Image (cartoon, rainbow, N blue to C red):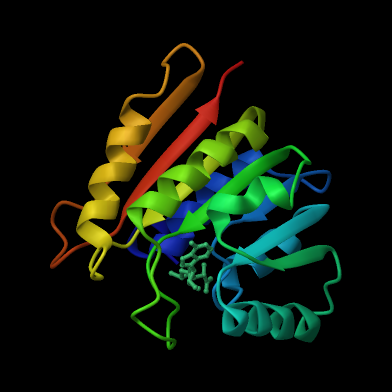
Length: 184
Ligand SMILES: C[S@@+](CC[C@H](N)C(=O)[O-])C[C@H]1O[C@@H](n2cnc3c(N)ncnc32)[C@H](O)[C@@H]1O
């Protein structure tokens, strides 16, 4: 697989540099569980978050099918994550948008994504990584993308280093990947 041609592979290639068998990871949008599974196979412990019962169920089934029990799945809005998690994390990931094969009306939104990012920064270890794959073709996507990019652009550059990857020659609304690491 050529990792630049598949978004999940591009993200995984970068995540691998930030995790090992002692790591804690948080998947803030676990959806059908593909990323949660990827993380659970490589980390000591993974928290999987989603607002939809269907997503939590799908992720649970996928993890069990693969014999993994090092995850806690939490159904909540990821803007409220501090009510559920206090443990610091090496890697915190988001795949914005709607549940693939699910209800396309239930999407991540600008307001909850930015509030959740504020919480994620508090939970991030020094030298840890926040990865945000922005799918912005959905109804809330344009505003969400703008607000998220504004928020990360204004982060203190002496504490955080932010990178931004886009695919300028791809059609329609190609996803974009934002990466934030904490330097101190
Ligand atoms: C693009 S999907 C994630 C796909 C997932 N990474 C996978 O591997 O299947 C986005 C997910 O975000 C969830 N979501 C939407 N708003 C949310 C919120 N405020 N808090 C937590 N999850 C949310 C949706 O229910 C959906 O499952």
